[in-house]
Amino acid sequence: MAVSRGEWSSKTGFILAAAGSAIGLGNIWRFPYVVGENGGGAFVLMYIVFVIAIGLPYMLAELALGRSVQSNPVGSIHAIRPGSAWKSAGYLGVLTGVGILSFYGVIAGWTVGYIYKMMIGEAGGFGEFISDPWLVSFLFALFLCITALIVHGGISNGIERWSKILMPVFFILLIGLIIYTITLDGAAKGLTFYLKPDFSKITGRTALAALGQAFFSLSLGMGLMITYGSYVSKKENLISSAVYIAFFDTLIAIMAGLIIFPALFAMGKSPAAGPTLVFVVFPELFASMPGGFVVGIFFFILLSVAALTSTISLLEVPVAFMVDQHKVNRKSIVWIVAFVTFIIGLPSALSQGASDLFSNFGWLPERLSSPDFLSHMSFIFGDFSLGFGALLLSIFIGWIWGADKAAAELTLGAEKFTLTKKAWMIMIRFLIPLIIFVILLNLFGIFG
Ligand code: PFF
Image 1 (tube, helix red, strand yellow):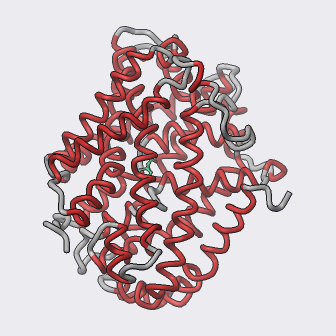
Image 2 (image 1 turned 135 degrees about the horizontal axis):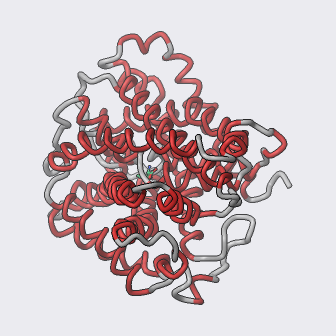
């Protein structure tokens, strides 16, 4: 059915691309502020439990379906239940890809702007920066163009080679920054907030936030892992690949927190600052270090690259869908999807002060989202859609396709999986859909 389906050149190539998708703004920008808003250590602990107990086994399900049927989310469901309504779960994934890209690309644009700000030695002025309508729109468009250019030219080669060099550099830079911030005066308070769980801070809302963050960070719930899994060879071990992806993704997020929270408390700032946290704290940190702006330039370049490997994957899902299902030319559809995303994303770009209407949009109740349009999009697509999509896909894979078929697919290249097969089947059929369902219900206040 597919026009031309490739295969990853190697297991490392696949892990790199999938980890590249997973590691991004979600780890460095989103994770710390969500931790800050949800009270710190207890949230971090709950997050780790969700990654291991739900995210990882769920990721295996998406990968198994993708590799077995070798198609995009819509095509994969169609191949198993032609003509059924289940296909809408695939469409939801495609839509979610565009929805996330429309606000994610805006923030990715900011990171590029900050490379320049670091070059001219300017740490402050975040408020003016994000409320400049032309500047943010330009940076957003620029980021979408770079993303489209790479997806347009076929993905793997350039970006895989880049990631192999840049990701380790990023890692080393993060370690350096951790060492610096935990030796600052007052850092200990930050570490306590970040690492010492206070269970009284756990509520339904924080549980949803932790699950939403786990799915967002691991790139789950919209069929990305179905799409990327469709390019994996039958000889590869999907289990160990998934463990690597989840491990590195979580490690980078935890490391980001180890930089941010000690620095925050040392500077006497509140951890609940929300989405602007990273863009305010990191530059101030660099400004306070000798030679810090050079470190800052590197940091924002690498953060842009991390965001780029994620935007590529976000664009790839709708593009793969159009290429596979509608037989359109990849090269032109890439630009069309990018353009549509730009239009959908403009209100988000203008919602941080540039436009009154979008900055105080307020369609969603305050307990769900801040009033600005970008936060609305982030809640609808980044939290709710991923959770809902994962609910549908886990039921589809566990019950309609069949957990036994999925498990058989996972055993290819991973014979030892037979030992844990039964447990995994129970999880994907019962535990995972149930937990996601309860958390979604809770979101609408069903439990008061
Ligand atoms: N996982 C990415 C991040 O943490 O930045 C964001 C993302 C990419 C979410 C791809 C979903 C997705 F399919």
